[in-house]
Length: 104
Image (cartoon, rainbow, N blue to C red; front, side):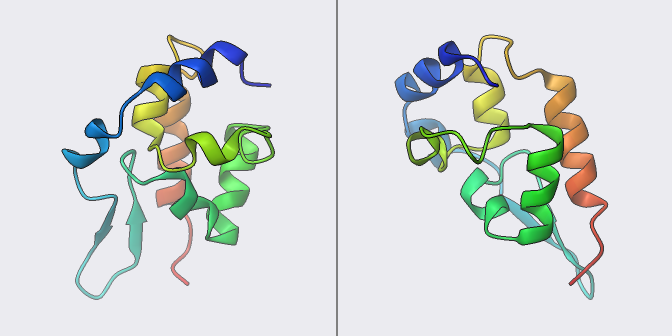
């Protein structure tokens, strides 16, 4: 389970970070939508296949009772605010797994 400190840090993070970020999804001409590290978790969770990736790579994230408090944050923001509890490697693996999903 993700540590309580992660969520305290996430609560302290401001929404100003979200206003200056890269696009949360990239659309390639004639290709699928690709999730990035800047995609809000709630957008990823809305796609059942992508939610399965989150559940596999970051267990308990979507089922955490505090999900409503951090769902608008991106994986990158969560990693930065976690103080190391959510590693850069985990975020990179999750993004790679999301980008490997078949188009649907």
